[in-house]
Length: 81
Image (cartoon, rainbow, N blue to C red):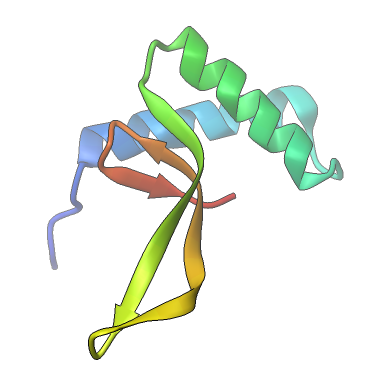
């Protein structure tokens, strides 16, 4: 079995998501959960960027569409809600 990359960081992020679910429950629009995630990341003093686009290159050609990540956390983990 392979080792989980960034195990401690992912554990912390999952904990934040569980807290959001515990507080808000289900059924809200995605943007509400994203806003709550910003609150939790900020309170935990975890560095993040929100709504980051990445260019994708295929066989030397930059594709016209981007990969979209809802969050980039610690400058190394992509989070898509």
